[in-house]
Length: 188
Image (cartoon, rainbow, N blue to C red; front, side, top):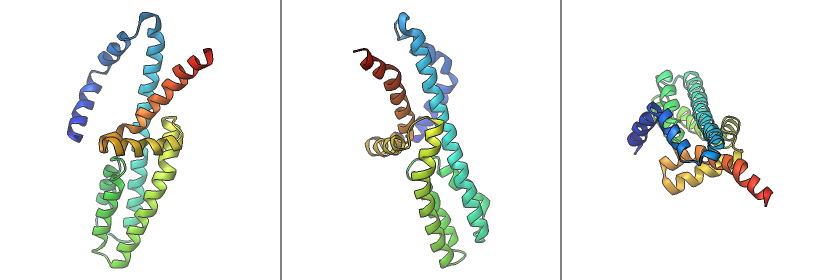
């Protein structure tokens, strides 16, 4: 599933201008200018999501490097890069990275392993309830509560792919409600 998403994303990015023109042509000519503005804003929010996700991933990698180097866990840079890469996977990525670092920490000592597990539990909580809502709230312009709920609902309904696209979809729905739904309600 992940491979299919990556291949589709590459094809979509390579042909983005034609895809956007096709979306624009689906709208009636009288509303096309508005559709262009809304579509561009949706693409901006999706770009913000990718940027925010990369920032969170870098933070997790840097903190992992500091922790691993501080406790003399072997291969701190490699572990940090692995955790940063795995952190791109929503919901379970940072947990899998934490398990791998804890397993490598077993080569140092049991107390270091227990401390590493505690570090990743605290970090996972801080990431889920502090970092993601704040960073995604600023880059995607989606409130923190909506971010958390979107990832939980998307992951529960569609699994990993649902969790991955939950925040951009929530951003698109929020934009459509703000720009189309609320003005229509106000006119009636």
